[in-house]
Length: 95
Length: 485
Image (cartoon, rainbow over all chains, first blue to last red; front, side, top):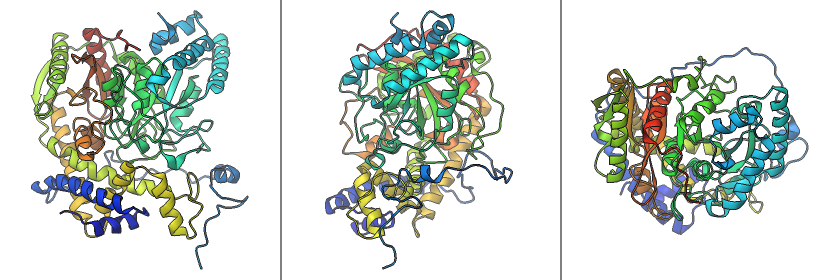
């Protein structure tokens, strides 16, 4: 086994997902399959090989630091499931 | 010819000549959608009034001579592109009812060019999938055969173009999501070089791999679309400041002097015999047209599925953290703590494949596993990229099939995600290496399903793709074929 049900539950908690018992069972089986497959990468000796995280050689994309118009507050708030005129409203954080 | 069977260029010529109006053309497509949409199931939202209003404006512009390159031409958009006047769901319940406050740069470019946007089309949820079956709302069908997949993740784009519901569409390609559905539906689809087209307003899946591109009836149309879409955008810091050639001018350059590389690893076990022979016949046509054929090797091909299915989910798990029920999208209103609200909103809003990839990605990035999975995959990505750099010393194009098989029946792989991932083997490398690729129809299977040829070129050499693709299209002689709808 590459991954256990307990590990799947731990990862789900990190990813802010709540899985049913049946989902945990199914995801564990499928993830185990996928992780067993990707283990083929271990066959390759990659010592000294640099990583590629991006395919273009852009280091920094600078622009002039000028004040520009930004999204109006009402437009930014409009899609919030709960909001008032100033802010998004969420369940109480500090109890 | 019926208006819905025209190519983009043909429709453009007739509009400019004054033979038809943009309003009449738009009405013809709306009528066509009425007639065939019940079996194609491509559209997630159709916007008749907006389309007719845009058509009326286009007619004015055509009359006073201020029309842009796509003036009056009806198009569809994959529902992963932000549109300020149409909902953008990404095929997910979590974004049901979401209308973005701005247009994606490509949408703005289409509007500036005068295009008529008909609506938004179906896709695998957050572009994760190879059949569009992971769409939360509808599963588009292949216009060539009832009950068969249109491919994915841009399945709605490919189906809507192939079915004559629009003249062209925009899709996004993270591991083949433009090229594969184009191949399965018998149309042309291009994934441009990473950085050629702005990603601003494309809802992110895997940011180092995603690229927007066109799906069209033929190669000429694809070049026309790329001329409009390409170019640096200050809103996307990964778009490249570089001159954009006129892609249309390279179509007729001929094949003389072009070296076509055939990677032996792409014609391996598991390739459908009819796909193999259709692509080989296509290669023979290019040779007859004057190209030189070269045997090449891309030795790390067997690792590309493993690399992709670590890197793409890793980036996705990070990108999709933004769907938390706070600023947009679905929220579970019963949850009484913030963490519980995040968990419940995400668990109810995301479908299985999205959850699966978030879990793989979070695992591959988590403490203790990062080096073994994400780092290792990013190193092998370098080897895959180097394979292509070496190959392009020996040839100008790498030619192969797009999908190992023609379209398959809906439901075939629904219980086996790994089997589905393996079908992407021929298209993933282009995204990992950042190079451009195109899918061009080259034949049909014995049961009438289209087969596409993939061509890949080195960074920013889309012109070579257009040149060869146009030549193949001329030789193959199947450009006029339309699905039996």
